[in-house]
Length: 418
Image 1 (cartoon, helix red, strand yellow):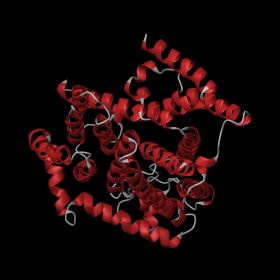
Image 2 (spheres, rainbow, N blue to C red; image 1 turned 90 degrees about the horizontal axis):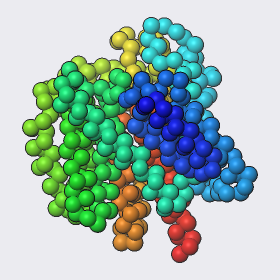
Image 3 (cartoon, rainbow, N blue to C red; image 1 turned 120 degrees about the vertical axis):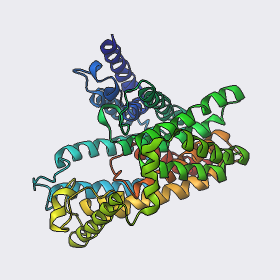
């Protein structure tokens, strides 16, 4: 029955995506964030989730272009330019990277498979920037992260309460604990801020009830990066909340939740954060960063090659090869310094843009103000985590940047209309 449901799901939304390609973009991001094929994998035999939505969405987009229904104005900003340069050097590093064809025991990721994933992620980013161009479409575009967050909070806590959990909690089908925790770091701010949009206090409080269970989901992963991201986003919310008393109440509530529900694994790992110079995991990160700096110096333009940090590692360090565990270093080492700088531009441009948008809409449009604040908070949490994790392929980041790009476009349109 489940198999039939998902077949009908993709047939229905595939057809709708040809007529309204922006719905295809929304549905695709929902599938990317929730990853139902990882949760209910037994229902997806013979089904290709991305392909089933991407093909009709692209067809619909082409029809839109031919009918003159697409404006390319949303692409005319620094954010899109930075993403374009980023992707260009990812491609060049795949073609000319000196270690792309080196297949030693330290090749953690296949270069071809990585590039196949990257061009799809970037394609959908650019499509989304073009198609999510109105306030009403933005409302629908928020559904993927809100619905995915609510369900995955349930899924994580169900694993714990059902006794299936042994050690650190991984995401569906073995998704890395850090990546799984990262999803909650970027999604929980949306539950908080969008909760303010509800007029009914009962509905608002029921919505917010998911937040402490989301914290618990992060505790279960044992991810120090996820915990640090939570702390940063909560402090950020405390100082920027629409009502300060609610924001600051989150701090003692979080402390109580941590003391009560964090568990021995999370607390033991958290203690090592303050001992960064001595803890073994921290030491290996520092070793990886030093190797990354040497790679950047040796190959500053195209890097060592896409997905080739591992194979190149032995030539730049006598330590055990590993990933960089830092998004900038990973990207700059593999695809060159221009790719790394482009990534930093996307971060800081988005943060500045969203901060301005919050000020612009604070007293003019409650919905846009709340979305801007949620996205800003999530990006701050993401950036903090990205300093300790390699998140260059984390699709949630691209999702957040689509929202940031919407504000870049919409702000200009609003100013032009007076």
